[in-house]
Amino acid sequence: MSHNQTTYGIIGYPVKHSLSPVMHNAAFEALDVEALYKLFPLEENELDDFFDQLRQKDSPIFGLNVTVPYKEKVIAYLDSLTPFAQKVMAVNTIVITEDRKLVGYNTDGPGFIAHLHELGFDPRNKRIAVLGAGGSARAVIAALSLIPERPASIKVYNRTPERIDELLRDLGARIDTKFVEPVMSIDDLNIELADLVINTTSVGLKEGDACLIEKELFHANMMVYDLIYNPAETMLLKIAKEQGAKTANGLGMLYYQGVLAFEHWAGIPLEDPMREIMRKALCY
Ligand code: ATR
Image (cartoon, rainbow, N blue to C red; front, side, top):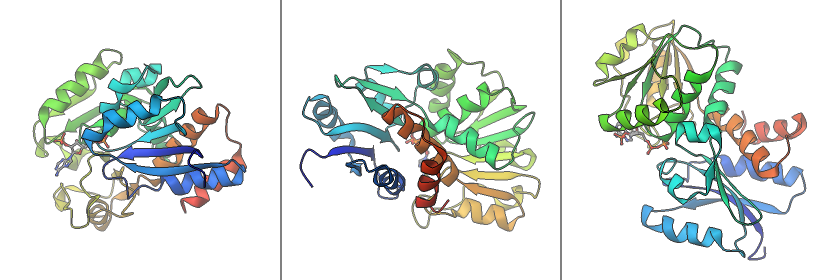
């Protein structure tokens, strides 16, 4: 492997749980493209140097994904955002142009909606409860607010309430967010009345992480969606399933956002056989 091998990758901390390399490397291999998708675990104090390097003409990196906790922070390093990323003010995909300009995309939002569609969940008039107000929450809430099948309500709880204020301020600048209601406690999410509960927090990524919701609140007429896909079954999903709820992890969202990211890097749509290769690589 030469030093200058064309490289793609994901930045975040932690990133070791990510299945993005498996999916994208399978696609490169199938297309006979000499490129490698790598994990870039970066501490916050390493971001400045990383982006300085990225702008250099001899950088081998031509595209990136972004995950916890940098989906919002990376915006400061980018040259431009797509209109949707501008609405969300969170970026999970960066395209690097030939003259090394950095363009921010958000493929999490459409990826989430595509998976919800595949699951057969129609969000129209549904009551939705969202845990978390980070970069992923922004994408999910923005996407749900923009589809024609609009939910009846989206309640949002976050450990740090100020982040919900920021989320609503940013999204509210370009999206009608009148159905989005910030709540100050998990109790006020009214989980027992929700049709869809979405975990966008990183609680569940680590072994031994608890379930943030009391088990009695889950019921058989709800869907519980955890954006986390590794582990495949978080404590949240395990308990929800035991209580009879339908459950889904974020592997489908990972797949759909990944296909879109790849298409943005390649500048062409991926044909069905290529999509199937990515899907199979994830065992999805
Ligand atoms: P991402 O870009 O993937 O959304 P993020 O922006 O770092 O990542 O957001 C992580 C989310 O997980 C936030 O909602 C965070 O809550 P805070 O804003 O209060 O930090 C939430 N989170 C992380 N650890 C948590 C914990 N132990 N308990 C509750 N929420 C937690």
